[in-house]
Length: 282
Figure 1: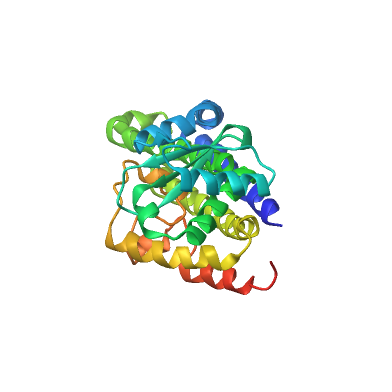
Figure 2: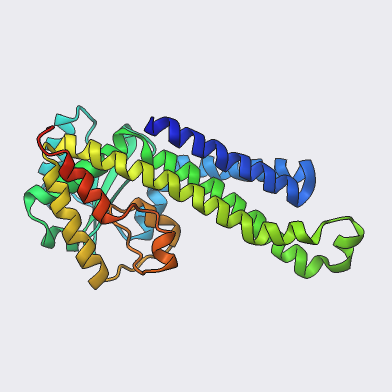
């Protein structure tokens, strides 16, 4: 059911892209939007892991350099019958982690130096189990596709913005509806964001459950999430691109009100509640 929901949401996102592309420039606009999305998806599929790792200054570590971390990842991958991913470290005090890569054979897990200092072995096992569940479920690819389609819709909204500024009376003579331009500028990126967040939240719950299974005990991750939530609010992370925030185990973007409403992650309290409800089933 979880995967069916994700597939439906991706279909909705693609439909939005076609609809707003058509609104912006007729059939040609829709085709251009699809081509943009196609190119972006292709690039993201092959290179997103390298781009994101470089963006956060992540350095690959060997077993000799980080034996504790490396051994946990190796033990978990053997338990889950998965290929061993590359292991990376980011020099960031904020405790966090993410996984990337287009499939289990080309995957990487990255943790901050802060998370290594904060969590004990069991809690770190819970976090890494969560990240490996993302890899096994190919959530990284799903999220990348969603993000790039949403990005294409956002690109169309920028086109509408510039058309409204520079098009002026010419666009009116050509029959471009000014109301359609306003819809493109405001509604399109908002609608894309809402759907993208719904996809991200559904995959996050799935990775929590799957990760608890890999780690062997849901309380490991529940305890880790409590600490991570607390310290991410106290030590804000340097996020070079907010579009990558969905990749982390807890959102590196803090704030309340509308920021909380549009979070890419489910509420920590709800995630912990679901994990605690699993105790006794593993």
